[in-house]
Length: 122
Length: 296
Image (cartoon, rainbow over the protein chains, first blue to last red):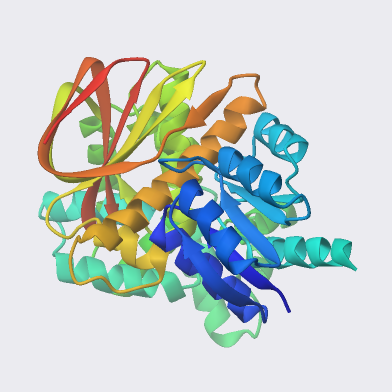
């Protein structure tokens, strides 16, 4: 299935997400705890998909998304937020995000987003 | 929630031991309330009438409700309503108490009236309390005129009940300009309004949240346990931010933080709501549109 990079400042969030994604048959090839690390890891690991939390210290998810997209216009990034706010979703999509999921995590919602984004690749 | 709140009151009043309360709560989970007890509690039948029906039921293979209708004590519509009430938390609690012979219905009703008077509840409030409906119960305990504060408390309590402990209990809130804590996880939101949500607990009480939310067993409130509580707060604030957004109020979360052994000070008052999660005391600490200082 997909090689995924998880970017989230919360260890708990990364752990829960890892469990759902590995349960869905995907491989977690890296984790980053802020947006800046996320950009560095993306360049190094070249994942199929990045899951990107929005609210993070040092560099937030929207800024990290923009850097990754600048590096690789074909990068597939799914934004994750605890707030299902329309403005954030619109801004992220405008910056090139491929999909959007909300916390608390719902396994089906996450795996569905992964399938949609992978489907876009075919 | 009803059983834990009222049960705690009975223990504090020394009408019940903690051990007996635990037995009652355990039975409550499994008990089916007898229709006769509901009917008497709802004042649709007298005790004598219920006893007569029970006597007939001993040698007739018929349901309580059917006999009550035959004897002209209840209508079919009343029986239907009683059947709907059978799952009510207040009624399952008193059924468990009477099944275990701990207190009679009259003793329970007297204790409930004492609870009503001691908490300044009206009869309407008491019906809300007995309903077991969280949305009707929360306002009885959250004493604030500020809709932002009451809204955030509501989301917090409902999310704790949904994701952490469906049997949580709540106590009346209070306000203060400062709050001393042993352990606290907090997160602010900024935008059209600034708000702060914190969850505080002494010792390892916050592990009741951390362990369940992270699906992990932490030995103590280490940075990973705090991270789990912070992430839980992040989810709550997100849900509230979404609700505000649908009303045209824009707020955004900042990264959460945690502190040990310190004090929160606010220019305007903090709202503090004590709750019991898995019988361990945790406090919800909330502020809106006021500068907060953390001394830790």
